[in-house]
Structures are given as C-alpha cells and as structure tokens.
Length: 135
View 1 (cartoon, rainbow, N blue to C red):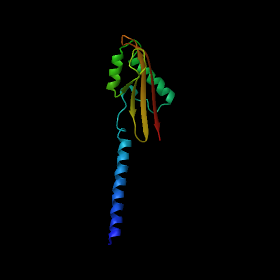
View 2: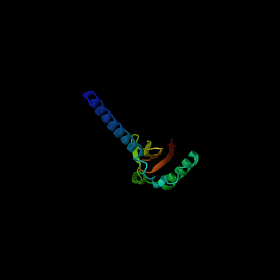
View 3: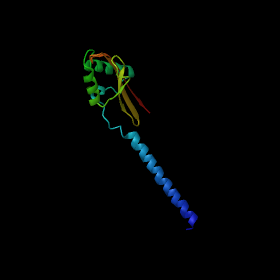
View 4: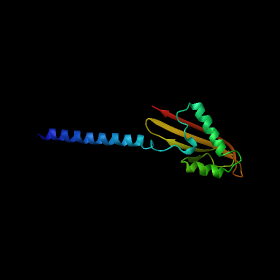
C-alpha cells in the first residue's frame, strides 16, 4: 500500500471515530434526563390535555402552599422536589419563580411556579404553568 492510500485510510478512520464519538455524546445528552422521575407535585399530569394539566397543577400548588402560608416552606418544598428558584429581585412583593425541567428525546417536560410574599414571609399569590412537548 502506498503512502497516500495509508494516509487516506488513517484520516477516514479518524473521521469515523470522531463521528461515532459526536453521535454518542449527542445521544447521551438527549437521553440523560429521560430517567429523571416527575416530582410528586407533577405526578400523573402528563398525557392529559394542556388545559386540564394546568388546572390540576395550579390546584395542587394552591392546596400544598395556600395563600398566607410561609414562603420558606414553599421554597424548601419545591427545592426538595428538584425545582430551582430564580428570583426576580428578591424584595418583598416582587415576583419570585422556580422551575423544574426534564429535557430529552422524544419529550421535554417543564414546570414553573411564580409567587409573591409579604414582609412577614407569607405567600400573597401563587400561580404555576406545566407543559411538555414531544417530537
């Protein structure tokens, strides 16, 4: 085999290994969250129509974290279920938000909680949004 053919074969082999590595990494990135279970507050919501999902989710939020209850309990409860708090300012009366996401193929799922609290740390308003999208 001459040198040119060997170089071509070597470059082709490197490109195949690189391609397989890239595809494997992409597959891992897309599927790594698929085994992540839904938090209890989101259980059994998937598969319903989006209006019913959101009504059920908001009802669950308001039952578990009613107006007047401690904001610290809400934050701790959501954190234990895997939500990440994203504060918008952090001051009393400002809107706070927490999110939960599961990204992967074929579906991505997400939930948000938005709330306000007074200067005593009591919830004054709470709302949520749940959704998922599949290919």
